[in-house]
Image 1 (cartoon, rainbow, N blue to C red):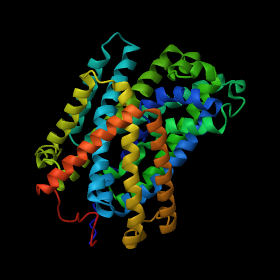
Image 2: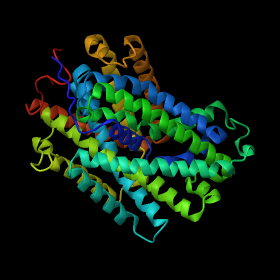
Image 3: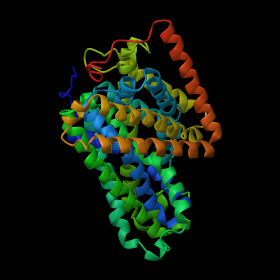
Image 4: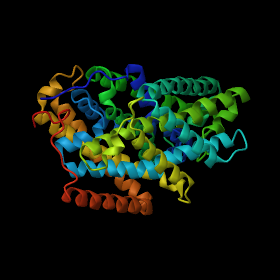
Length: 443
């Protein structure tokens, strides 16, 4: 029978803070200018469109998380309802994206923003911030969640300062014509921004640590997604409206902040906005990745030592150390980190598709589990949303692969390496296991 895990350390505010931290990362501060060059005055519509595509997958993901609260849900759901092999490849592909692109890129971007304020080496600063959040997460998820809440409050405040301080500087002439690059520009802009909006899907990976997850997970997403959408749209309108498309194209948001914020408020925006946005993303990754290692260790697909917890804090110190070590090696290596940041897109898309397929099968196989969810939208709606998300994500993968064929080929090669590893390990008898009682129940 299904066993739900409701006694975790993460409450509603913590979950909202983690979700916002996953969504509002450093990419907002760099990709808004890129998207403006593509979508023009309609960049705020591109934000809304990107969020619309994200929500297609977010609703089925939230239903899965509420019906089957567990850790590492983005791996365990496909493992239970689709295929263990596909689930492993999705987790492996995300790992390639996160360790090769995400964490080192976040750390380096953090260092570059600090360098804009003080003469420092961005790599050294990036190393310091990775080390700091490695140590925070060694102390346990309750400590990491508390830190995430503090960063979340400062981040929202900084973006609020940008929006409120810049509203009087908005010139409506800078926002006309409303859709300066037409429908094609809006869609292309949304494709770029999609990866800025995707992060909230990963909250199901901490479902086993969330108190009353059946209720809390849907509630947290109902709060965080509209909040982030409002912040994104308002930020885009103020940024474009204050300085115009030409000045903002391919530039960071600090270009707009320079136009209307005082030096003190600009400093707060850079620190509380850009820097805290990046650190919330780093912290959230350290919170979530060990959940995948735990699930994979349970399946005996990675060494069990990676899921071993220490006696004092109950945290997987060796798993966290592996996450830290791989990200540091990528940070200090001569790899083109900025370009490899595109890997985040491939890993994110590839992970979402199996989860959507799992949602479609789960509502058919385990309807009683979903019926117990207060916010359940129904079998038909869940199926339609999940199927639509599969189509949209597949199209976005093609668009991204066309734009970055070399990075795509590299990512596919590393995923193929993971497939070989899986086949060897399972044939040697190291993999395979009994059904997961948290997810599979009586399947």
